[in-house]
Structures are given as structure tokens and as C-alpha cells.
Image 1 (tube, rainbow, N blue to C red):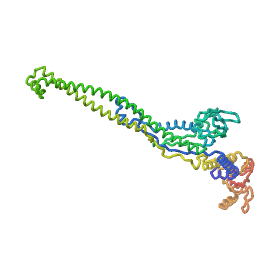
Image 2 (image 1 turned 180 degrees about the horizontal axis):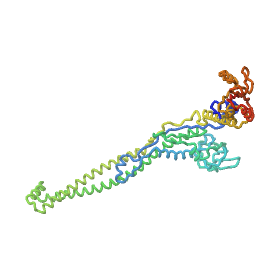
Image 3 (image 1 turned 45 degrees about the vertical axis):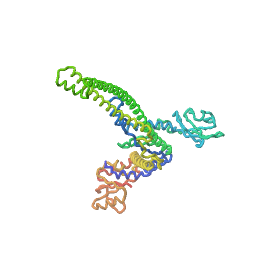
Image 4 (image 1 turned 180 degrees about the vertical axis):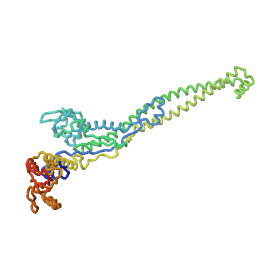
Length: 485
């Protein structure tokens, strides 16, 4: 069988260009419908520099040798990402996720709203009646739940709390809209909240995917702000714990210092007593010198020897004790300074973290991606058009293309022509070759079949395969040139 080239495939597709173009147009129309039908998804992003700091400062590690302050590992960025995810859950609860209140903002404020179940199949709207003393929620004129201002009102599928800002005499009509997608906070966390570390830095991107770009922007910024508040409170909490530990340590130092000072006073008293005792030997300021002189003169005098040893022993003990007291006083001063640092930290209002960039409502949605969608539709349409054209070419029982001619011919030495012009050029290029034509061709001699060197078979498009095979068998003993018209 003759080799089928890429050009043959293109020619076969060209012969079925209507089918090919129909596939492309169909996929293009589907992509346009998808773009118009699908709701735009926005992706506002806030970037936060997270807090990566050592919980215990240097002074704590110096004091930790006594086991009074436990050592604490350093917080990493990954840990902060997980903390932000936990905070995100609280922010989603605070924002109510799926609940929209249409109420007069100057009179009433929403203090809390929360989705409870996830079995809603479509958006639901509830009538809300506000009076000076009560709140009523109705669904199809049926009371769903009721309560009063400043208290949590639990309905079947959601709960909320309203605060009255100003007094109003008449009844106010408002509404609550329960948005269907996504139905639960878990679905928001899985499908719509993206919290990732940016590269290997200490920056974390907080992105929210939603159809409502303003809601998504608010959530991203609320998560970032709540994390900053959390870091401030966390530093205060650690400072309070550290301060309590240091105050306990200060109490221990004070108790030990009191004890050491008491011992020192007694020890000094004993020494003075000894000096007074020595002076009784002789009414002179040089009593000790005289004792030493007597001891040198009479080295074996046991009484004098005991007196001198007792005096020096007491004096050395007092010097050591005094050094210990001085060291404790220095440590006590360090602890007092650290307590002051902790008190400053407790009163801090600035977080060790900060928001690098707030989320803002994006101008363009990230989904649907119109350019990518249209390009993909054209690509798929082209691909399916080629496949369908080739499949149709294989299944078609009539010869319409060069591919089919090459598929059904069994001659190895054969030339294929798409039209008579190409055939004429070929015949002119071989003036010494005798050609036999199965159909008359103008301006060229048609030699007898037995005299001819080559045959030229003219095949009309749409000929049945079996008719073509029968025609081909009549010219199978010599080289054939097949022309498809």
C-alpha cells in the first residue's frame, strides 16, 4: 500500500471541510455559552508578614538553668499558616458566610450571624420584622423564629444577633437572604480560602475565591487583621506568663537574701564577739598582734592556736557569704528589669507582624478565563474535526480523497494526481512515454492498452469502492497513474 503523507491527510480534511468547520464552530459556541453562563469568580489577596520570633527572650534562657522558666521552641512560618487557618474559621463564623441582611443600617446593626446546616438547594429569602421590643423571622407567612434585640436568635438553619442603634416607633420590614453556594464553612475552607507561604519568605498570602468580590475582599482583610490582633494578644499572653514566673523567681530571691543577710549578721556578731574577747587579754588595740607574737614564741600553746584559727575561720566564711549576697542582688536586679520589660510588652498595642498589602476588589475575575477557554475550544474543535474527518473517511464507502485511493490501491509504483492540470504537466515531462487513458484527455494521444508504457486511470469522486477495484484490476499489469477528479 502506498504511504499516506501529512498532505494527504490535509487534503482529506479539506474534502470534508464542512464537517471539520462544524466541529470547530460547535466547540466555539459552547465556549461562548460557558463564558456567558458561568458566574465570574474573583480572587482578592492580602499579604501578611507573619510573626517568626523566639517566645522566650535571652534573659529567660539565662534564668532557665534553674528550671523556673521552661524553654519554648521557635515558631515557624508553617505553624503561623496553620494558626491563620484556625483564625479563618472564626472569621467565617463572624461574617456568617452565607447570610445577607437587608436592614436599615442607621437603625439596626448585625452583631453576629452564622450558618448552621448545609442542606439548602437554592437561595432562600426570609421576611424580617423588627419592632421596638421584638424580632420575628417569617418564611411564607409562617413564623420561623423570634426573639429580642441583643440576644442570639436561633432559627432552623441559621442564627444571628441584632443590636438596635436608634429607637423607632413603627414596625420595620427587612429581609434575610441565605446564599446557597458554598453551603458550609467547611466548603469555604476547602474550596474558597487559599492560605500559602510565599516562597521561602515569612510572607503569607491570604486569598478568597468568591463571586462577590466585595465579600471576598472583606474576608481576606478580616482574616489578616484578626491574625495581627492575635499576635498582639499572643505576645501579651506570653509576657503575662513570663512576668508571673519572674515574680515567683523574685520572691525566691528575696527569701534567700533575707536568710543570707540574717546569717551574715549573726556571723559578723560572732566575729565582733571574738575580737572583744581577744581584747580582754590585754587592754591594747594590738591584742591580736600580741596573740600572734605569743603564738610564734610558743608555737605549741594549744589555747592560743585555737583562738587564732577560730578568728580566721569566721572571717573567711563571712567574705564568702558576702560575695553570695552580692551575686543574688545582681540577679535580683536583672529579674526586676525583666519584669519591667514584660510590663511594657503587656501594654503594647503594636504587633510583631504587619500587613504588607491589603486586599482590594479586583477589576477582573480570575474565572472564567475567556482567552484560555476560547483557545481550548478551538483546539478541541480542531482535534475532534480531524478525528471525525478521518473516521468518516475510513467508514465512507465512496472514494472522496487521495487517502482512500492510496488505501485501496495495491500498486507500489503509482503516481496520484488531484486534478488534470497536474496530470498534464506530468505527461508533458515524459514525451517519449506512451500513455493509455481510461478516459479521453484532450490534446494527448491515447495509445492502445497493449502498446502503452504507463496507464492513466481517471477516477471520479463518489465512485463506489467496488467499482474502483474492478477498474483498477483491468490495469494491474503496468505502472498506473491515478487522477482523482
